[in-house]
Each structure stands twice: as structure tokens, then as C-alpha cells.
Picture 1: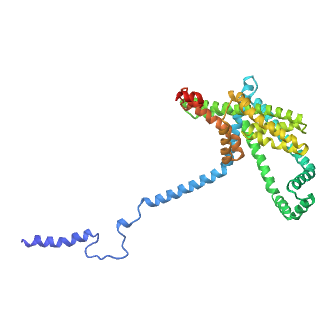
Picture 2: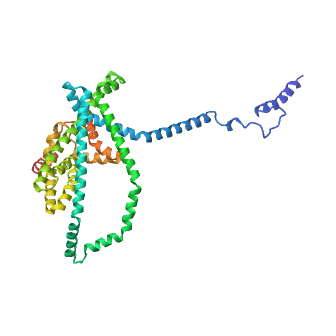
Picture 3: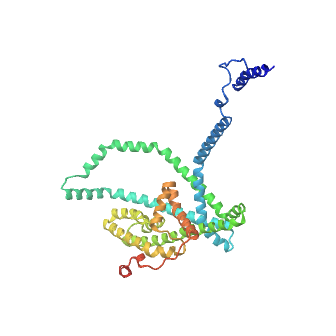
Length: 399
């Protein structure tokens, strides 16, 4: 009777070992059986792969849409800044009882007329300047060759230069052929640019005319606590952008009249047209605009009376100093004043990011950012210290 429990224990051991191996008693392992649980693919991995592919597809779609829509975004940004610049004039007329739509139309017609007048003036100046240079080119070449021969003891002639030029006519013909092949591309560029200008103008008109509705719609999406901050920021942007435009326009008028009168005294043809060119370029291109604007009247003077070019250079330098240290601080004291170095840097950065449009919008954007910083960045009172001004006598006494 005692042998039965021992036998049952011996009979139970194989059963437990077989169960621990995961096989039934008497069965043998085969190659086609399922792999152990630890070697199977995790349940979450397929879903993670599908999710990663979906996110990658969404990123590529967003990247494509951003590249396709960046042109529209730039145009909307330009239109917004133009509407900010025009809004003070429209608000002033609307405050006097003029319908806002009519006030917007009047302001934009005036701006459009001034822009067309400047472009027509520039075109006439360029055509006449090129014509004068071509007419005077033989005389200028004769004088240049005579100066070279006299200075360097050579014996060149204009005929030799002409022969050498036509000897290399293959280069000229290749340039002409390349330009002819690019005519279609140039025409497409011009038409595309015209379409962009029209689009920007239309959106600027709509944003300016419906400025109150646009602000009301934006504020309706925000809680009351945030609406005041948004409207304050909008007012700052309008004040700085409009102030920059009007102060530059006033500087342009003064510069145009001053340079036009000086060129008229010198007897330069189209003096006041050159003055308009001078005023616009010198006022709206920061720091170096005056020197760029001086190139055209200097070229005109060289074709008529070269000594006048020297007087123009002197006058340009003197006027630039007068504008930077006398006129501009007084005019921009109530509007916007951006440090010349900061203005030049902002134009370079804006041009590098968005080309000519970025360079045009750089200074108003910088002025607006400067206004934000002056509003929200905490500043402290500075104690009087001679080391700030670096006055030699006081600094030595302080030591």
C-alpha cells in the first residue's frame, strides 16, 4: 500500500517537465511549429510604421504647400504694410466726414499717380542720358585716348580700338543671340510682375477700406483681455509705418527741390527731373541712397562739362551730412527714427530674405519692432557719469 504514492510521484515528473516545455507528452518538436513568443513582431510596431509614414506624407504635403504659397504670403505681407502706411491719411479724411471707401480711393489714386510720374520721369531720364552718352562717346573716347597717350607715352588711336572691338564681334553676337533667346522669358517675367503688382494693389485697397471690419473680426476671435493688446500693437504698427512713409516723403520733396535747383544753376539739362530722381532714391534707400542717386547726374555732367561732376560730388556729400544731422532728426522726431546703421543692416537682412520686397519693408518692420521693445522692455535710469560721454578733463578728475 505504501508503494502507490511513490509510483504516482515518479509518474507525475515527466508530465510536469513536458508541460513546462509547452509540448504534450509524447510529442516531438517540428520545424514548422510557431516561434517562441519573445521572437514575434511587437503588436504596436505596424501601427507605429503606418503612423510614421502618415506623418512623413503630411510633412511633405505641408512643405510643398508652403513652397507654392510663399509668393502669396509675401504679397499679402506687402499689401498689409501698404494698408498700414495709407491708413492714417484715410482715417484723417474719414474723420472729416468723407466716406471711407472714397477716402481710400483718393489716397491710392494720388499714390498711383506719383508712382507713375516717377517711373515716367526715370524712363525719360534714362533714354536721354543714354542718348547723350552715345552722342558724346566719340569725343569722350578721343579725349580718353589722348590722355592715355600723353600720360603713358603710347600711340593708340580710336580706329585701333574700333577694329579690336569688331574683331571680337563673335562675343558681341553671342551676347545678342543669348538676349534674343531670353526675350520670351523676360516678357513672362514682366507680365508676372505686373500681375503681382495689381494683386498687391487690390488687397491693399481692400485692407485699408475695411480696416475697422478687419480689426473687429480679429478681436471677435480673442477673449476681451487680449483684445486691447492686439489693438495697441496694431496702432503702433500704423503709427510707425505711416510715420516712416510720411517722413521719407517729406525728405524726398526737400531733396528733390534742393538738388533740382542746384543742377539748374549748373545748367544741367532736365534739372528738376534729375532732382525728383535724386529725392526719391536718396530718401527711401537708407544711408547710401544719396550716393547711388548721384551717379546719374554725374554721368550727365560728364557728357556736357566734366568739371560740373566735381561740384555735384561735393554738393552730394554736403547735403548727405545736412540731411543726416540737421533735417532728419527734426523731421523724424515725431514719427520714427531708426539708427542709420540699424536701418542699413535691416535692409541687408530683408533683401537677403525676401529680395527687393524685403529690403523695402525692412525699415518699417524694424521701426515697429523698435516701438514694441520700447513699450515692453524695462529700462532703468542711468546715473550721470563722465565716462559715458568720455570727456577727458572730467574723466581725469573723476579718477
